[in-house]
Amino acid sequence: MNFNFPDISSLLSEAGKENLYKNLIHQLNKDFKFSNINEEYDEDIAPVKLKRDLHELIYRLIHEKFNDYLNLLYIIDVPEKQVKELDGFDVVKLSEQVVFLILKREWQKVWFKNKT
Image: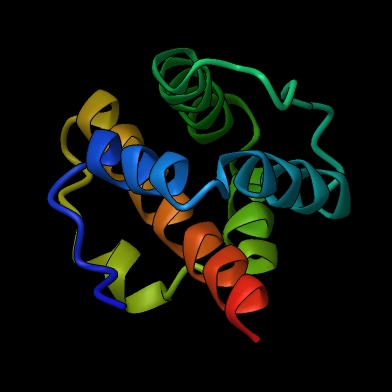
């Protein structure tokens, strides 16, 4: 399986095609709970809304609760090297790129669990 998606929409589309979108939402919710972040998404949330809501959440965490943001990245297991490679000058753009990294990592977990 190729995990090099060009963007968030492609990743979410693939999750839908594989009938694993709800599993992706469950994995996100599980990792948020482990990270003590009080955010939970309904399994029927539209991909566009999920993308927007995650972007807002990550933006808020970076600005208001940076330690919680770092803890979330650790719990989800987003590679530190990938985060460090991002340009942090524009926080709006940075938070969108981090959402993409989060969703890619969560998708890997879900896909591997489903295939084993």
